Amino acid sequence: MRTTISIILFTCFIPLVQAYDDIGQLPADSITPLFSIEKLKQAMLASEPSSCQPHLKDLTVVKVKYIGFDEKEHLGCIIIHKELANDILDIFKTLYHNRFPIADIHPAGRKPNTTIAYNCRAVSNQPGILSQHSFGRAIDINPLINPYVNGEQVLPKEGKPYVDRHCHHKGLINKEGLVYKLFEAHGWDWGGHWLDVQDYQHFEKRANGEKRNPLGYGNHH
Image 1 (spheres, helix red, strand yellow):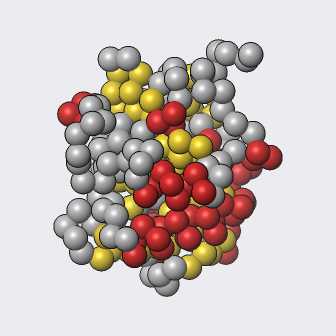
Image 2 (spheres, rainbow, N blue to C red):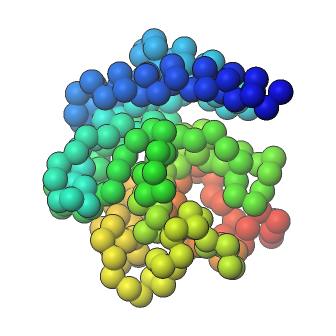
């Protein structure tokens, strides 16, 4: 049974990887509705969990330029909700012109330090609650350098050396820095401000102006 499941997952994964390769041909500084890219549309409809299927029609692909940790220019694609596409394009243009370093941008989240927006998954430590990433309304930037911290839990686990936010690291986000100021100016919330956990990589902009309770999901006052 395990072999059969692995074959099915691998078969579904191949078209999605190929579709991601195809969107690499999109022009820089562009916004393209996801459902207008037929191969990507069909691959995601075939592979994404049913809980996220209704939201796929609202997604766009934003092609951005960025400066890598190697100090060279790169191109990457960010899958984001259509209402937030202009925010993302404006923010990443400014980050590029200011040469803020980003390790990697890819919709598959292929490395621990890959910047990624859309990702169909539950909230960390909250099974059954869809993350804002599942709606294309959140982005994680340089996750290895800006880890999720919940007590002793650090995600990704390779991010433990970067829990101390007083140290200077390439690609680090803090409230005095450009990344935070740009997202705040566009009305996004930063996970580094939360009181129950600190999600330093995470910015989100919920529908209808809603906000996450900074005390956590179990607090409603």
